[in-house]
Image 1: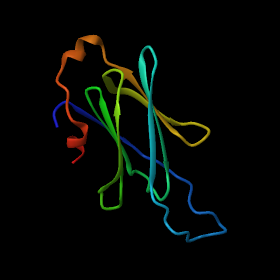
Image 2 (image 1 turned 90 degrees about the horizontal axis):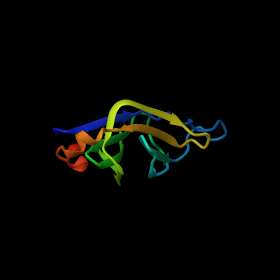
Image 3 (image 1 turned 135 degrees about the vertical axis):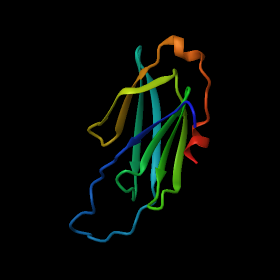
Image 4 (image 1 turned 60 degrees about the vertical axis):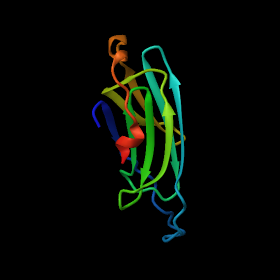
Length: 127
């Protein structure tokens, strides 16, 4: 979709413990939040359950974002829409983990001149 920015985030999660080598798969859970700083937007994404590496995707369009968890067949199994306080730029984005395992993505805000552009639907872009 034109105007949509896509950021793939690879998650590496701890494997099963040695005491239980074949645990039953846990359903995936997703929690995401947005915070605002003067020059950046920060997303905090926490995923738990049986989530494969590379299965978390974040899509941006205008001031909207959608966090998606996909299964092995690339079907969306969990999603959470987010409203961003400003339009963001993919260039210069950073992604790190907090000490509690929460993924933190920091995106620069776009300059005000870009705010007049068209907005898209990140959920439609995810299909």
